[in-house]
Every structure is written in C-alpha cells, then in structure tokens.
Length: 618
Image (tube, rainbow, N blue to C red):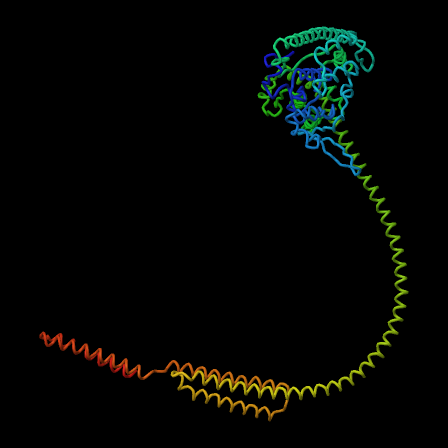
C-alpha cells in the first residue's frame, strides 16, 4: 500500500520530489507544507484510474499537472497560495494561472481561456471539467462524493483515513450478480461467456474484501500513529508516506470496473482498454501520428506493418498512462525488434498483445476519427469563410447604399455650383469693366505724376552735383594739408631728412595730376557715372602717391649712413691694426725672427690692408 522505506515524520522532509506525478498532491507541486493528506489525494486519483482505466490528471510535467488540477477543481484557495514557495512558477502576479490566456472585454470583465501543453493537448480554463463527466462509466453518487472529499485543495478539508473507513462501511454494497453487466447487441449470452463473467465477478468480490482489509489495516496504523503523537511530543508528527503508488479500491468502484470488463458484448477483456480509450471524443497526437505514418492502408496490413502499428499504439497507451515506453518500432532489423519486444515488461507486453489482436479494428477506427476530425475542421472552416463572406457582402451593400446617397448629394452640390458659377460670371464681367475704367484713369494720372517727378528729380540732380563738387574740394583741401603735415613730421628726423624734398615733389605731382583729371571730366558729357568715376580715379591717384611716399621714406631710412660713426669705426680698426703691428715688431727685436715668422707677419699686414680698404669702400 505504502512505501514505508521512504516514510518520515511530519516535521521531517527527506525529499522535495515526492509522489508519482499523476498522483502528486497540489501542496507538493506548489512547495507548501505537506503531510498525511497527500496520501489521501493519491488514493482518490488511483481509485478513479482503477474505474476508468486512465489517469485522472495526466500531466506532462509539474506545470501541466497543476494545470490539469486547476482545470478540474478551479483556482486554488488564497491561503494555500500564500504558504506556497513555488507559486510564482505557476501563478502570475495578478493571480491567474500562467497556462491560461487572459482577455479583457470591452466592459472591463476578464475572461480566462485555456492553453496547450507541450505535446499539443488542450487545457481548459479553471473549473472547465466535471468529475461526473470524467467518470461517465460510473455514476455512483457515493463514489463521486468519496472522490470529491479526497480531492480537496485545502489539506485540512481533505478526507482522512479515519473518515474514509466509516464512509465505506455506510455505503450500500454493489450487486455481485451479472445482472448489472452489459449485454451484447443481440441480448444473448453463451454459457461460456456467462461463466467467464461470473468468475470475473467472484474474483472482483474477493479483491474487494482483500482491499478493504488492507484499507482497514491502514486506518488502524493511522490511528495508532495519532495516539503515539502525544507520547513523542510536539517535535514528532504523523508519518508521511513518500514515493508511493497505492493500489487501494473500494466496493462501489468495483461495480464500475466490472462493467468495463464486460464491454464489447463478448466479455473479452482484451478490448476493455481500447474501447475506453477510443470512447473519448478527442485523441492525442501520438495516436493520430501512429496511423498517419503508415505506408499502406488498413485493409492491406502485412505482418511487419501490423506489428509496427501495434508497437506504436502500445507506446501511445504507455505514454498516456505514465509508464515506461519502448521504441521497438524504430528498429529496422526484425531480429533486434524481436529482442526489444522480448525485453518488455509483463504489463507492456500484455498491452502490446491486446493491441496486436485489435490492430486492424483500431486502425480503421483511428482513420475514421481522423477523417471525421478533418471533415469537421473543413466544415468549420467553410462555415467561418461563408460567415465572413456574408458579413463582407452585407458591408459591401451598406457601402454601396452609402455611395449612392453620397453621389446624390454630390449631384445636388454640382447643380448648386453650376448656378453659382453663372452668377459669378456675371459679377466678374461687370467687375472687369470697372477695372478697365480704373486702369484708364490710373494711366492718365500716372503720366501727370511722371512729368512732376521728372522735374523734381532734375532739381535733386543739380543739387547733388553742387554738393558733390563742394564736398570734393573740401576733402581735397583736408587731404593735402594732412599729407603735408605728415610728410614734414616723418622727415623731421636726421635719417629721413633727405626724403623731405622727394615727398613734397610727389604731393605736387599728385596735385597736378588731379587738376588735369578734373579738367578732363569737365570737358566730357555730364552724367551721374562721370562724377563717381572722377571720385574713384582721384582717390586712386592719391593712394598711389601715398604708396610712393611710404616707399621713399622706407628706402631713405634703410640706406642712411652716419659719416661720423663710420669715421669713428674706421679709426678704431686702424688703431687695432697698428697695435697688432707694434706687437709684432717688439717680438722681432727681442728674438730673431725666422723666415716663416716673417711670412706670417707679411700675411697679417696684407690682410689688415685688405680689411681697411673694404671698410673705406663701405
């Protein structure tokens, strides 16, 4: 019943990964504190699996497992989420499941849509599944109530083993005869089939008794542990079973199992799993792909294709039920494939055997389901397309009506514009006549004003000539007075005194040239440009004269030589040479001078004379 080797006390936590995924309690997934109630959760999941033949919550991972729980039981209570350490992995900040799509409507309301798992299975919004519909082969209200009490979000509200045993004893016993079993389509049973069903029912009754004894023992252990809890003190608690896969059933669920075991009309147990699997309205992608990968049709299956299809269907069933899968169908060699099949577990081989027997029927059934699904999808698409076309046609008709009304309005506006255009033409014609009259009057007044303005401008021109002449003479007087003063100042020093005559000569020549230029322009026709040209040419001559004056001053200053200073420098050099000669003669009187010494003295005297001549020339 329980793996006691992995059990621990309530205040101890050996593993964070505990329980098989299909039977894992929500508080373990969310990382909250867990205890004995997780075993009751697993018990409820396994009882449903014993009834239906399929896991109640077949999650692909922890997130998908919690999505399956939310899909069945709705949103978890706030007190459980507050104590959960891993709630952010599964619940967003707004309190909605992460696998759901949140849509905000125009009125402000929020709608939750489901999602899709990693393997493409649909997961509905919170509370979208009903346990009664999932247990459609067993509608016992006592059993449904028992499962509801086992599958509670809040561990404190979940059924305990002490509460489960009285509930089992209070429930009415299920019928043990074969009257509750399904009959065949013809309503007749052979004696062999009846004996088989009766023997199966007897075995089920014995199993019920054994399982009830086991459950009673579990309840006794639970009660004893509760009594020992006070003796250990608060530091110890009720033992918790970990990594268990309980195989507990109750009497009322066996009635549903016996019904399934006789389905198909023949009492053949090999078709129970297939009929339960394909009674569902939707199949997984694995089942559909198993048929799609076939290279030939279902009515032409050979031994190899028959075996491969049975292996693929076996893998799909084992994957859905959470068991280990075998990839024998992917092996090309027949010997290796036979070895792989031989290495299967007993449970997997029995499933393979069942699927091998019914492969042809299942192939046709899956093909029919796939064809029906494609047909439904095509019809839905056609309906959607036709709906869109209908809406588009309605919109087009509305647009055409709008266009017709707008065209009528535009015609009315065009007629109004035409009438206004005629009226505007008459107004423009009368206004053009008025404008012609105004233009004629303006031309006559313009001629009179032209004559008057010509007289005024002639007066202004004569006045301008007088002003320009007077101003030019006044500027000439100021220019020459200033030039003479500057020439006298710049030539007052000793170095530039020689340039004074030259400067005044240049200024005199400038005066002569300027007078000649004025006489030349006076003999020409008088115009506004002649005055301007006279002024520009006069100032050009003046600038040229100033440039010559500046060059004369610079050259005089640069080439000036003071005679007294030059004579003084020459006397200094002569005195220096005489000193050198005197020293040479004194040495010769004291010591006999050799021939080389005489040559040196002559050379020095020649150099001194040469230097003296160059100084004098300079």
